Image 1: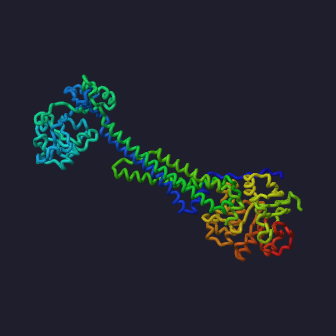
Image 2: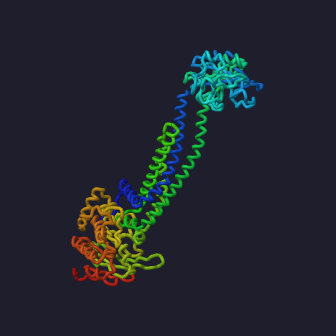
Image 3: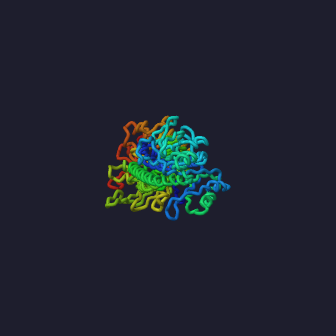
Length: 401
Length: 232
C-alpha cells in the first residue's frame, strides 16, 4: 500500500455542458414542452417591457417633434372664486422676456355657441368652445391644417372660422369647400379650414376659431385674453415659467395659471407604467410556473435515468460529477427557453410596434435580465433533482433496469 | 493464499448485510492475483452480484477488509473510490448500458470522461479500443444500429479503454445468443492473454468451466475454489 490515494478526475466545463446536452437531445419533445413554460414567461415580460419602451420612445419622438418648450398662461380664479382674465398688455409684456421665442393669445367667447345649422335648438351646442385667435397661433402651438387654410389677416376680419379636429368630426364636416357654413353666435360663419389634432393644446381640438377682429366685430368679444401660448428657448423653459405669472399679470400673479402641456403627455406615459407593472407581475408568474415545469422534468429525468447514473458512477463519476451534469442539463434547458422567449418577446414587440407605427425598442437590460432570470430559475429548478441524482447509490441505480 | 503484493483483489472475512438482516455475503476470504481470469459462478441469490459490487467498490462491505489494487476500500472517501474506479476498474454489464443517442465511439470515449483525459485523447483512445474489439468499422454507429454482440463488444471497449487493472464482467453473455456469446468469450480470453485481470460473474457452469479458475458461491459463501484445466 505504497501508492498515494486515488483522486477523482476533473470534469471540464465543456464536458459538463456536453453531458447536459446529451440528456436533452435524448428527449427532444419533453425539452420543447418544458422549455416552453420559461419561454412564455420570458416572452411575456420582454414584450411588456418592450412594448411600453416602444410606446415611450414614440412619445419621446413625438415630444421632440412637438417641442417641450411650449408654456401656457391662463387666467385662474380671483381670491373670491370668480373667473379672472389676463390684462390686455400681457402679450407684449411676455414678449419682452428675452428667452421667449414666440407668443400668441386666444380669447374665449363663452356666449358664442356653435351649431351645424340655425335649426338646431339652442341647448344642443355640443360643448364646442369659440375662441378669437391671432393669425400666428399655428406656429406657436405646433398645429397643422388638415383641410383648407388657416385665418390670415384678410379672413380674420370676416365671419370665417377654422374648426378643431374634434369639432369638425362632431359637426360632421369632413373637408372644406366654399359652401360649408356653420351657425356661430347667431350668424353664419364660413368654414375655411380644419386643423389636425393638436397634442399640446387639446382644448383647440374642441374649438371653433375665429379671427380676433371678427370676434370684436361680430360676436361682442371684449378683447380679453384667456390663454397665452408661448415658446421659449428650450434651455430656459423653467426660468421663463417662474417669471411668467408675474409678467402676465404683475398686479395679481396668483390669478395666473401657468402650465407646460408636454408635462401632461409625459404624465400620461407615466400612468401607463402602472399597467406595465401588472403585466410584469403576470410574466413573473408565468416564469415561476415555467421553472416548476423544468424542475418537474428534471425530477422525472433523474428517476428515468438511474441506470445511466449507476453506469457513470461505475465509470468513475463522483457525486459532484453527477450533480454538475444534471444542473448543466437544467441550465441548458432553461437557457433554451430563455433564448426562445427573448426571440418570441422581441418579435411580439416588433410586430406590435410596427402595427402601431412606433419605433421598436427592446432595452438591453431586459434581454440580459431575461437570460439571468432563466439561468437563476434553471439553476434553482435543477438543484434538487441533481442532489437526488447524486444520492442514488450506484448499485441500486444499476439494478434499476 | 497468495502474496498480497501480487493480489489485485484481497477479501478478508468480508460480509455484506442489507437492512432487514439479509446477509448477501458471509465471511468471504478470497484473493485474485494480477493476470488471473476467474469465474464466480453460482445460482441467482448466491451473492455473486454483491461480490462484484464489493470488488468494484460500488458497494461497501459491512464487515471484513476489502483491498483493491493495494487500497483498503474502507479508508477511502466516496470521491476517492470514484477515482479508484475511474483509473483501475472496468465494468461490463449484462445489459450493456450504452447511451442510446450516442455513437459507439462516443460511448467508448465516455469511458475516459472521468479520468481527466482531454476530449481529443479520449476519442483517439476510444477508436483504438474499438478497433481492438473488432469494431473499427462501426465507430459512428449508434447502439440501435448495432447487434447484441456488437453492443457488448462496445461495452467491453468502454471498459478496457482505461486499461483497468481489473475488469469485472457481470453475466456478459447473458443477453446474447450462443454465437455472439461464443465470440464474446473468445474476446475475453484474448484480453486475458494480453494480461488483463478479468473476473466473470455467471450462473452458467458451461461458461465457468472454460475459465482457468472457478469460484463457486452458494448462500453468500464461497463453497468451492478450484483451478481447472482449460479446454478452450
